[in-house]
Image (cartoon, rainbow, N blue to C red; front, side):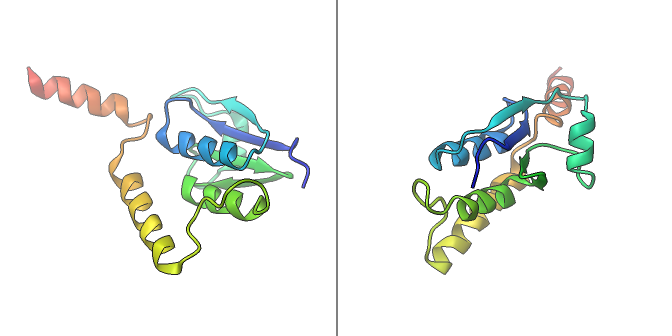
Length: 126
């Protein structure tokens, strides 16, 4: 597979984008990082992820994949012969991995909601 057509839409501060960047680096995939700005959604982002309208979005071969956990599974499968496997081979271990990753997804605030959380914290502190 040609790797020059791999692009990642994201924000440097997002833990979900970082998760995808780590996976791409583990698999030694060359990609172009397209920085999105908090509060401003680019046309490419809206077109590539019309359902959730958020990062990360992986663009590969003219197709878009969204949601970090799904992107990581895609990376692990698309570049199976490159670098170490990201996800465990054992079904139970894989399910456990996916459970904890989904737990983090649910509990860690995104960069878009972080300013609201910070505002709420300071408002409640005084």
